[in-house]
Image 1 (cartoon, rainbow, N blue to C red):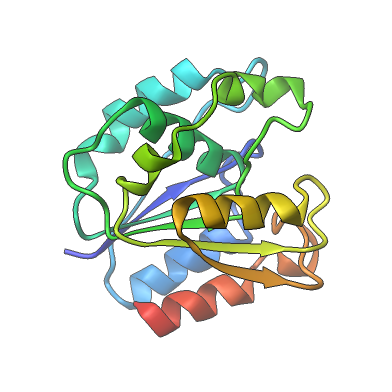
Image 2 (cartoon, rainbow, N blue to C red):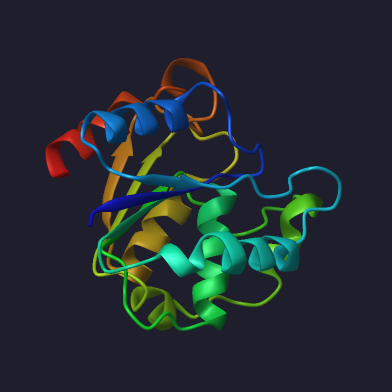
Length: 183
């Protein structure tokens, strides 16, 4: 059965914004949603996220899963899939403003210490889509283009969109439109 898995970024799960909009959309379509709040306070550890992912999320991934990740959630997915092979690829990995490098942010360097193996990442999903903005204040748009080429993703790069965690895109109408069109 079709299901959504949400992987948040460094800011955690917000009570408003696009996570809520995705959940609302999914409820209207009777699509189950799994989201888990990873540790985001203090030193953010990849190993802590990995333990929680393997315990709370990994058992529920299936060929019908749509993983919707934001920022560091996408960086986590890339690192995890570089190191591990899931036996059945998920249906789609939908990356929202995906983190590709630490960009000198000490709190998230743990997720980017070793290079990603893009061939392994490509095997984790049957389809990849990236939705991002050219006005992202944390990630240069050239990195979105780089990642799209490496994993064979469809790239939707919007001129006036920021990191999608604040401002007018915090509810992210483009993501909801994409979900309505495809699911």
